Image (cartoon, rainbow, N blue to C red; front, side):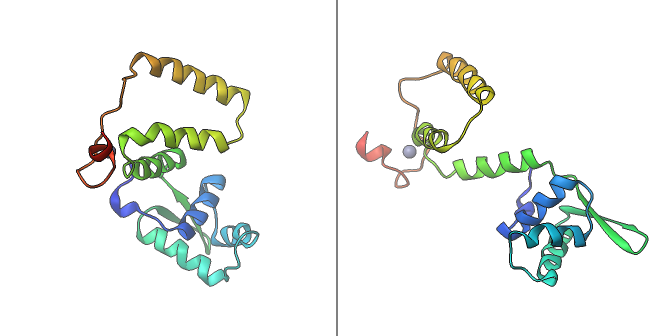
Length: 146
Ligand SMILES: [Zn+2]
């Protein structure tokens, strides 16, 4: 699980993706990768790295005169936690529609589709006529348009 104090900014996320891709990286390597995408000065990237260290998301290890950065946070777990957080803001009744929207705009492999078909087949067993609304009155249209 990702704790509340593990929240990261979009910029810190860019740094994390380099760490996740390489597992053990120096600040120089992070700067080099992100130069292809961002117009950040090395000092800016270093600021993001030190914020991640301060948040205890990045671990540091001193090898000679260099610092190596790594993380114990799993990328897939992190993304799942972000998705859950996002979907927590959506009425239960609207979630299917939002997932359909996402699916519709994505490029998928045959394996992805097979996996999704299996999930959907299983989901049919537990399906309901109408998903109950989980919102407080005044935060969605369910109570009004019921
Ligand atoms: Zn609702």
